[in-house]
Image (cartoon, rainbow, N blue to C red; front, side, top):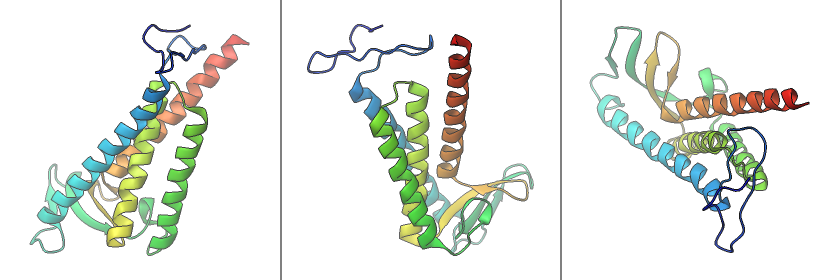
Length: 184
């Protein structure tokens, strides 16, 4: 099915079939959506980190501001590791891994140009988050984390974007597999 107004500049249109939620999306939009989402994540991540460093960073009198006691706070942390503090001090390895993941996602995305808006947003969230943390690792040698939930997790906007993007990606894959198996 082709949706009116989805023709490309050369007059061609893209037709999609499959689940009822699938609609035709111009190729330009298939690229624009994840790029815009990634840029929004990168800007939000870097701005919130700059504000956190100025407010609670190394030169501040206090490095923690509690919102709901010990359960929710802004807590400045210089994370030299990956998620949950693994691979602490291996900045070069984590930077290379982030660059590799971002490159793989961009390459895989470019080859298939997913038409699902959810998948486009998910890819943009993961790429934006990976690039946001990569900027910190290259610029600072660590990632600034500042959201504290309970005693353990410390994270930032980039980490949240990666997590939400991966959840959306896995849900999309699971729902597509469910739709595909019901057609057989």
